[in-house]
Length: 137
Image (cartoon, rainbow, N blue to C red; front, side):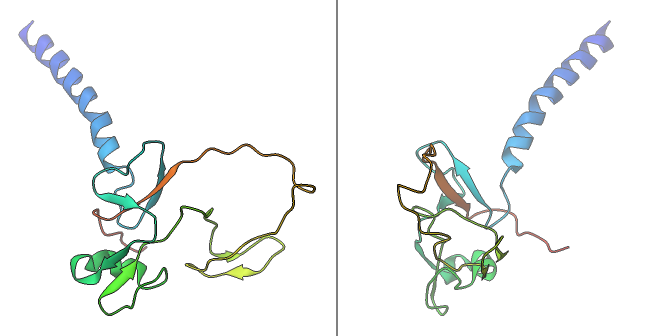
């Protein structure tokens, strides 16, 4: 009977620990960008708002981002600024030009007359600044 209680307790504890482990590993790769509905970015991340960062304090992050979002490349670099932008994949755009990573621009100019009304919701973009350095395949 004692072993049955021990097995039940171990199962309960391991079942409770699994969601916490999954939650902690989500978006933990350095430079990952993610959305949050919270009004702040979680610990280990910063808002993707174009901040200038010191290379000396963020060497691993700089090695991934470089100066493609700004900075002088000697002492500073910048995080991407997604406050007034919608991210798109780098490369060829359907029926459009090819874009390089870090490039800013507009996909299409529209007017109120030719655009159907589309609902939107504002969320906060965050970038992981303290995490696991991603390995390449």
